[in-house]
Length: 90
Image (cartoon, rainbow, N blue to C red):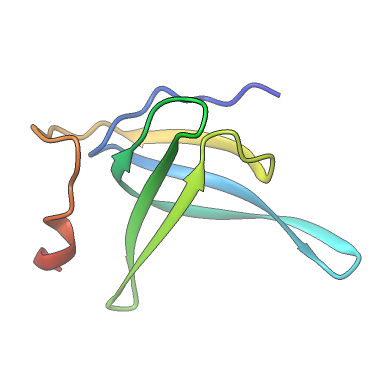
């Protein structure tokens, strides 16, 4: 299983995650802005979105088997690697 990893901080991505509930399994989409991305074998990335006026952040390991696929929806133009300032603006 090869995942699309060509995204950077500032990009809007949609992450499809496998959710297992009792004996059923479904895929849930989580769309937001990448606010950080760590590299390496233990790397991870954090996606932030605002849902019903509440900021929600979710951190995914890059090699997490529960990720079905990652879609880069929109390129972002930023000049920083860590976009923690987005937490305060909304």
